[in-house]
Length: 422
Image 1 (cartoon, rainbow, N blue to C red):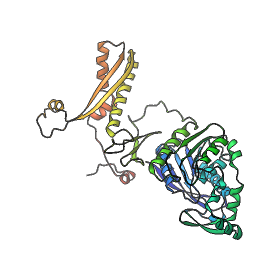
Image 2: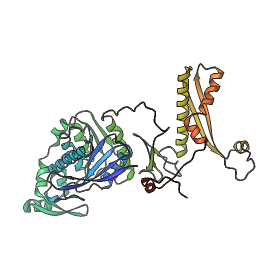
Image 3: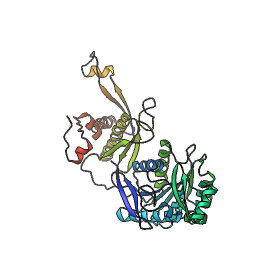
Image 4: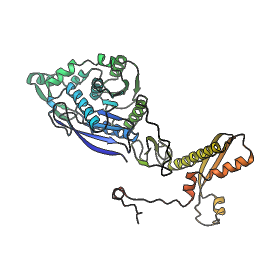
């Protein structure tokens, strides 16, 4: 079960800034700090979907509203690009105090430029990713027509309409973004960099990605987002970005601590399954620090992962193979390789006859057909014994020996009530 909590901290100018910290069940593999686009908020669709996707893959993510935006205090008119960078540094410090320092920075649009500028001030950061980011922060000046810029420069601040909303823009913002130069910063970044950009981005042209990439030193990577729009409004685009970030960043994170060799008290752990973006039946499955997907085939679902029965067969097959390997090692058998092929079937006539229900209507018998291939210099007695041992694997026994499933609602579990529902 993922956790989401409010995360309020003091920004660079002393105002309370509103954030949200999303965490996976258990210890996250790393914590990311997400910077949203210009005049957006932490809850903009791209930020929320990408954050959720990263959490499903074992990351913790902090996203927050910059000063004067969303739920944060302060006046947006008094902010600048530099103050946004300072807010990012303040967020990282608060995150380190309360949880752990961020190791991954992710920035969308102008937020991408901000994370590049902030990275050198955050020693724990090992990887930086930008999404549709401008090479020159002054790119935002293109959002204002000549009349608006003249009013801002003349009066020190003026109201402008951006994406259908009215904002008060201060003159210091225009001056500050005009003075920024990211080229030297990128050349001395000393962090892994991933540049994500759509070739049809209408707000920030894809040539910005080329300039960012050319200015940076290795390790650096560029991935095109094909036909995505600037705000990544389609769920599948945000899901794709989360997938990329998860796999790419893992290469630049410290190796996780090895699992202990102690035997667990129970034969298995806890698995979390919950709905995820990318398909109306798509599920995210998390076991410890491992995550994968489940779905149904096209026609029922969207085929983004194996079906529930595929996963059941996988569990039995993996347990069978592991059990045979451990037995062969203990008995010093010359078993070179094991493979297990499994098929799930329903209402097979032979199955009905075998349990004395032939001719019943309906006869519903479910079965799993398991074919085990053993490679090695094994005599007939060893092969017969290994086949017997296959039926003793823990998953096989769980499925066949009186398995009970107790279901409770989450609120009951929190109250400590575990009796089954009527």
